[in-house]
Image (cartoon, rainbow, N blue to C red; front, side, top):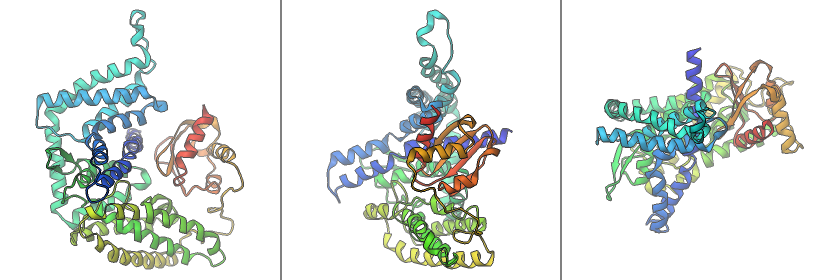
Length: 463
């Protein structure tokens, strides 16, 4: 039971991380367009830089907001207060502490959980003004004082461990990066890849710019101008722009000839999504469940891509994800970015030939190869959005079966009273690419970029 609870908490943290991370593409755009090599507008560049310089407090606010029941704003305020208390308290003990987004993550977790625990607290009548949600920032600050005292003495040890791990991954070269890329993909079905990415992109490495500002994390340092940053992002361009479209082509060629016309639109859509934007889950969930060995192979190829880019000294970065848009936008900040193109073509064919071989050899029921009575790709059409949301609620067991409903970029994240009564076939007919059941009550429905819209519609009807 404890393991399941810990796993569910990690999933919730992973989902909550997406809110502050979602602002990074805008910040990256402002930084690039304001740079001297583009529009040369210092005020635009400063606006983008302000986001990266204040990531820690944004993490505190976003995580607290994401963890809190009903995503209440009182939790967000408590998150900001907790962050300021933790940072000031810890640094008063040890002025050399540089926690980066770690302090923001801790503050967000504290504030979000304090909101859930104390939002309805009753206090004596003479203290009535401080009851309920007003009590949340107060108790969050008190807990944060204690935490700041602990971190003041403990975090230097954590910081040293993180630095050691980061140095090991860097110094071990291709092997360390292979492990990172492999785990980054392997954690996707569980929604925990955001946690790993946040550690690497926002807590590894340190860079001081000419103005004396300190930036921590591979992604943050890349946009701050660190010429050594981008090691933990470059490999993703190869897989997202070339590898996964190769996988989509293999699935198409292996489909029954009578169904190729039916599925070609779906495959072009998911391949272009991966190529242009770097959003990969819609295509990955086409084979995660139907052909899990392909997903393991895909994870290996991701690790290999990171190893290859490191071997050739390629450095590149992204504000959102490793698609063509970020590839072009950040081209001038990159090192040897042109090498990504020929290597990417090689990975396209690597994915295509190995996926084609295994799909046929193992007779995997990938898209277009299902049994005749399968309706995996059949979607409910000619229905309005309201009717479709009602169908989702019905497929998930009805309104009374919901505990919570939320989403990240590509999936519904739900807590249900009874997971056994959900209709997975109906969900597939509504466009679901797969259904995950990672915890006792947790259910994740992989939809693609429509997930947030559907989740908001469900929440509105549940109210």
